[in-house]
Image 1 (cartoon, rainbow, N blue to C red):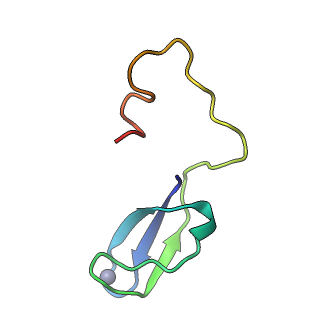
Image 2 (cartoon, helix red, strand yellow):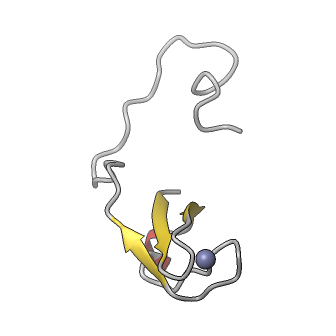
Length: 68
Ligand SMILES: [Zn+2]
C-alpha cells in the first residue's frame, strides 16, 4: 500500500499515512487532530509495473522493509 506524506497547515507537523490509492486524495487529519492538511508530493514510485519478485530467497520477503 503506498504511503502519502501530509503536512498540517495548523501546526506544521508532517506525517505519513498508508492508504489505498483510491483514497489518496481523501482528507487526512493531523495527529494533533487538525483537519487542515495538505498532501505532499511523494518520492515513492508507484507505477503500473509489478515489482520484481525476489528469487531464491529464504525467510523474509524484503529484509524488513515492507513487512513490519
Ligand atoms: Zn496539526
